Image (cartoon, rainbow, N blue to C red; front, side, top):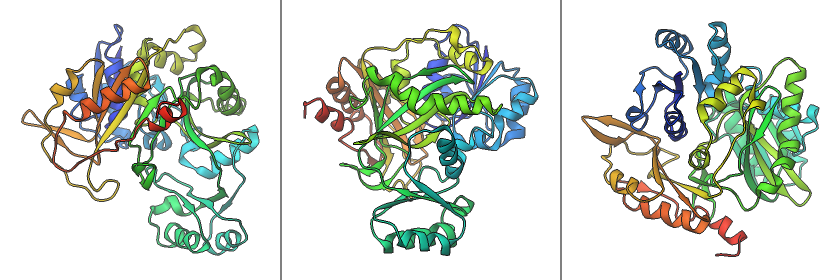
Length: 427
């Protein structure tokens, strides 16, 4: 197989790393890629949102499968464009991708499919939204309807905070058109977990659970980010509950879309809140989480290329998927200032020393190569991922590797995995 992988983050480097282990993969092209994917195949200087150029690239490179990493090209309809050329694609079409592209669409579909979720209302003008919010008990959750790079969700604790959030989203347009419409919902209490499943339009195969760390600061404080680290499995959601979570959060949506004639083929991600009233779905993503993808890929024992092709062709039920019983943990090394403005172009050293450690893989996120030197080019720079016999060992090895790596303005959280260790009674 000749594969075209779309994206440039740590998720895509992890996918590229796993895809190139498949004996069926003869060539890998990544558009646009990063410093890590460059070592595994050929980077193509085409943006992930440039659909015509991506279709042309797929034709020119005679690819047999397109794998779409980020959400934006999925929402824009890259799968639909590839389908028109007859090229199989891992990732849903534009209609199903609205599960991530529109919070209002996702909540409405959950209601139709009877998926448990927080009560909500949708608004497209400020005055009506503000009138509604004033009548609610606080805190409330306010979400920009459209894509906002993982930053369009605010937990408002007071009326003043809610009003400011609505003004910023709906009047000041801090998230652009994503804030033209907002979803206001009850705030759920509990602990979060990430649950994903491979889907081929009808068959659903759950992945092991993960727990992400969204906040920039230790103890889950400060601004939300794209994710500062993750580990798998999450003791909060053991493997014994995988089928239950799949039946609750994934299968009803997949079945509903199938009945609508809009099959979902790819990976569906449910962000879960484990409340005292049972699990509820916070949101859906229509692709692998980042950084959750990194610890998942190092645990996957089956052939990823075969799985993705089977999802694209509607024959996932033919495959058995196996996972390592070990635990994996990823620590994100970021540039200080992220998720706000951050410095770039810092030389990175110590990568070889980190990767020389046992069961350690360093996945590039915001990096680029210049004259053979690896430079930091993004807010999240690297995802240092380790596999261990248990969570404590995976955590220890990941931080040992993270401390081998140096660049100016390096920032990382030191508590990735602590919640899991506390749940296990080990911290």
